[in-house]
Length: 135
Ligand code: RB5
Image 1 (cartoon, rainbow, N blue to C red):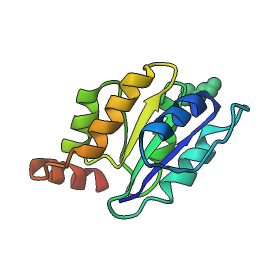
Image 2 (image 1 turned 180 degrees about the vertical axis):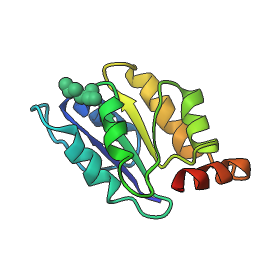
Image 3 (image 1 turned 45 degrees about the vertical axis):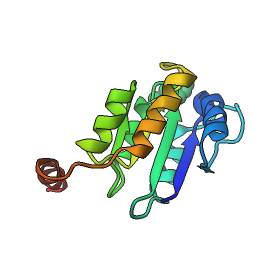
């Protein structure tokens, strides 16, 4: 499993911090200059294969969530705490965690990522629900 990370300018600092805490493949942005989050959401979404995971960060996490969920086989979950991060894996089989750098602290973000990467999908009734989303 590879873990990719990308952010816009608003998420750059939090992305840099998370890179010191986890082994992550960085897809940009590479500085604080203003940029467009959909470019980075797409860049990461199209790289995910099989059990790869992704971390997307913008100011609120909302724009990255909207953008990433447009791509096939992407289940991007905006998480504010560890419980959401665990449930995003257990119930939703999320393959991307989305964080709002202007909303949560670095420590909360780190705990969310830790939980997200160490929690398995429960399957069963949750698998049926994911299949219903696919139509
Ligand atoms: C950038 O100012 C901000 O709009 C962006 O990071 C994000 O929060 C969008 O949803």
